[in-house]
Amino acid sequence: MDCNSDSNNARNKQPLKRNQVDQLNFQLNTQPDCVHILRAMVEVMAARSNLTDMETNRVALAVDELFANITCHGYNNKPGSVTFESHLQHNEDGLQELHFTFRDYAPTVNISHWNCGKSKPCHDLDITPGGLGIRLIHSIMDVVQHEALHDGNQWTLIYVCKHAIKRGRP
Image (cartoon, rainbow, N blue to C red):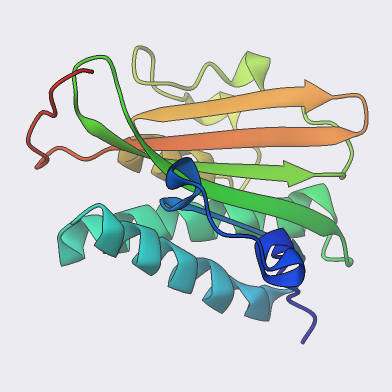
């Protein structure tokens, strides 16, 4: 298994800054068995944000599905590199948000014609055969963003922790 975790702080033995406490980052290869590492990271971040078991499972399902899409469709089931980051932050309403960012180096994807999102659901004709995963991701996450880069793609999934008590603004 080649699911490499990359931690600059562990290598450099530098103390964590306050804003790094609720953040996890690592680099992995697109192999199906690496999904266990993603699930573990989602569980850590879900615990830090006090998600229920049901919320944790739903968020993990969306993260797993996006990783599977990158592996299967982006890299065509061949080894590829993905940088994965997760962090917690509070939005302007004071609600806690759980952010997951995937950065791959697969061929650029153009999803603009899929018309997916909360305001307008995906249409069957917009999705490739067997492509219900993007619908699943949109149904779970509050925000799904894609950015086509010159050398790959960046995906951001945001889940608003609905149960969280609003936190006062500084």
